[in-house]
Image (cartoon, rainbow, N blue to C red; front, side):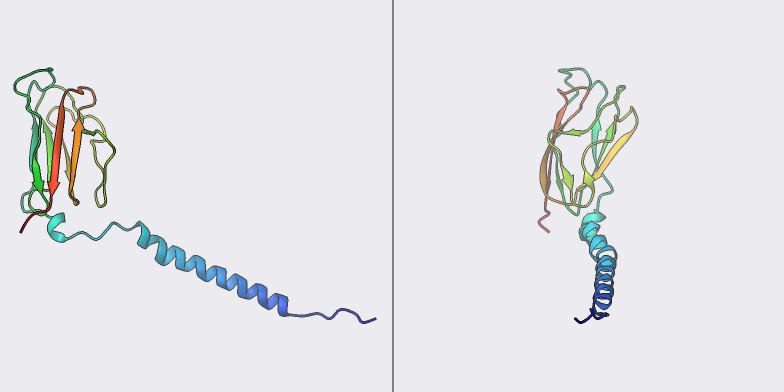
Length: 154
């Protein structure tokens, strides 16, 4: 009978496996993961539009259902010109800007005010993609608006 012989092949194989796993983890955390979490590349003209803000005003008395001063907003904004939209609350009551359906811009993230917009405060959002978006005020659901974001022709 012959006795089993010792081989270093298992040790070398184990070391090669550990080196390969380590290299994979370093690649994943250093190159793949940051690239996949990065914001999309957006033209500088879109990120810095010609107009500082496209202003949507929540008028005094807008909270009253049927008030003639409240006109639903249906603006069309153009990428590179007026795509940075700002809602300012000039009413005496707090309001929200809440989308009818969840909307997330690829660059700016989720659309919608993070809470109520108190009187005198504002909410702004930078649109970087064409869309048509319907929104409302959560405490006052009769206050509805629509915004259309389109590519500029020039």
